[in-house]
Image 1 (cartoon, rainbow, N blue to C red):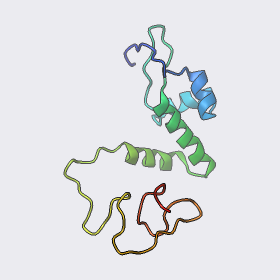
Image 2: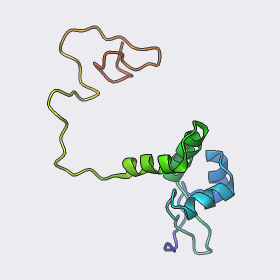
Image 3: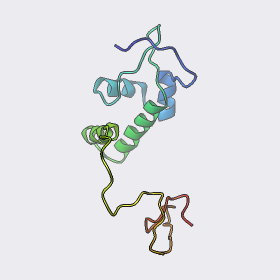
Image 4: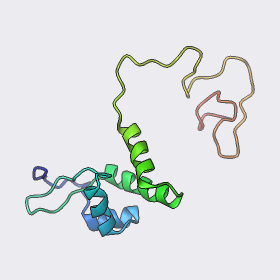
Length: 127
């Protein structure tokens, strides 16, 4: 059981989390039981307290389920996103940062989705 938490302005009840993530309350409890969601902190009166991270995680799980992924596949993706990478990890030679400009003089061509089609810059800076 987690230590008692004092509610912050961004603290959400399970009902509000359910509405925002468009997931049933029992589904939230189920995901906590099977460890898809970490156990939330609780207030002094025992109520669960959630925040924006749980909202994003639940929305991700819901959308992944809608797309046909099973819970084991979703759990694997969530584990990757939570993985702490060592500080010595560097990008390999020849790769560019997503915000760096390509120096080849190649024209920047945004795709129909708004991202740069040739990888020369960040999506919002592509013109």
